[in-house]
Length: 493
Ligand SMILES: *[C@@H]1O[C@H](CO)[C@@H](O)[C@H](O)[C@H]1NC(C)=O
Ligand SMILES: *[C@@H]1O[C@H](CO)[C@@H](O)[C@H](O)[C@H]1NC(C)=O
Ligand SMILES: *[C@@H]1O[C@H](CO)[C@@H](O)[C@H](O)[C@H]1NC(C)=O
Image 1 (cartoon, helix red, strand yellow):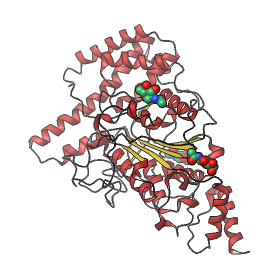
Image 2 (cartoon, protein in one colour; image 1 turned 180 degrees about the vertical axis):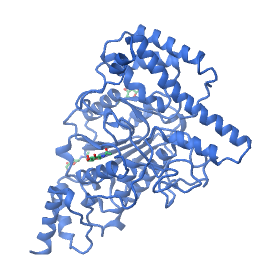
Image 3 (tube, helix red, strand yellow; image 1 turned 90 degrees about the vertical axis):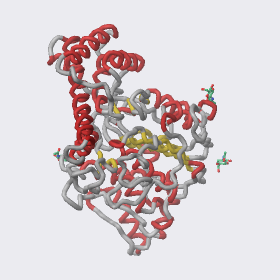
Image 4 (spheres, protein in one colour; image 1 turned 90 degrees about the horizontal axis):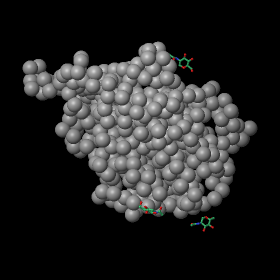
């Protein structure tokens, strides 16, 4: 058998039986294999590679989302994408945050390379919002608000678009930074994708999404035939995971009281920065990321899911979207599909618990008896109480509407089967959310986990005025009783 046919044999074998082979081969001649792959994949000439990178949170306890996004920028930049084609959205309150032990530096792993340098600040602060995100995607400069760079995706029919979004999410929603910002609803995102497709201004698009319940942004919603391939950090109804967290394995440096990354995100980023992206297909990367995201942590992490035109696009190479770093050319091939943890599996934190850990550590680390310690304690208590408040509110609302806790839970906790969107009537859902928030205050990042209950109320035909009454009753009761001391001070999450 020649080296060439042996390589091809390996390739087929690897694709067919991904669980049982690990080839990280520098000594097989892959130059011919490369030819084989590119002939197969790149029939039409490559247009411009565009990218939108968005971190949807702010606050130091959410350090990791902006770290992920800055890291993604570095990977794309080294891959050969130009700044003029990479649009970055980030609140930009981390690098020079007073809690940051290394001012001006953001890191995305414990080894600590800076990923902040050179990142374009196209849209920062309040300009990170739904309108600007969708306007950038549509290439519509005149629809932008605020004072961002004005950079938009002015893509043409031969171009590719890569969208990466890292943040908190809930059932059918993705957050934007700030307590009062409108979230991105799944139906609006999918409508925007349909609109973009109709304009014929891209060849194909890849979307990577890190968020809790991320699958719910596409489940039963993403239309086939638009040349869009998606992977999500979690299925439609589970949490995604922070990574490189304090007190964890592998541990974040002790001066950091916050997680440095997210599991799904660092899985695709660390894969992409090491390997030759010309020889890594979308499907292969999915498999590598899927396994790492599920098995890296002890009780299993989350399920990475693919959506969209999977069959049509999964054999394209990553290079088509994110380029490749020429320094990685010798790493021809990455088949880490039998990925196993190299160290003790980590007990890392769900995205929704990371803030709690942060505020607890801020308290623990503050000098005994200091004002700082007292303040940190207060903040921690506020976070705990905010959690109890939203948990309690939904229970009371359920009882008010459905009589017993059992009946309430049946409706509120219902999860629709795969293939169905979280809600049929999106305007009902949005109105329900507004109605709840009017009585109970805006959903915190943690509170997002209860949004599904409101979607379920729409599905169950609950009347808006009944939810209004129930919310009033529930949140007034909570404020008056055990939550007398509950403070409305929000923790910027
Ligand atoms: C761009 O946005 C503006 C303002 O929302 C809108 O009036 C216009 O129709 C949009 N243009 C395109 C090409 O969609
Ligand atoms: C896109 O690619 C096709 C095929 O190579 C070419 O004929 C066409 O001119 C290109 N279109 C643009 C807008 O670059
Ligand atoms: C983790 O996933 C594997 C494979 O799906 C399964 O066999 C195992 O029971 C799971 N472990 C836990 C703790 O859920």
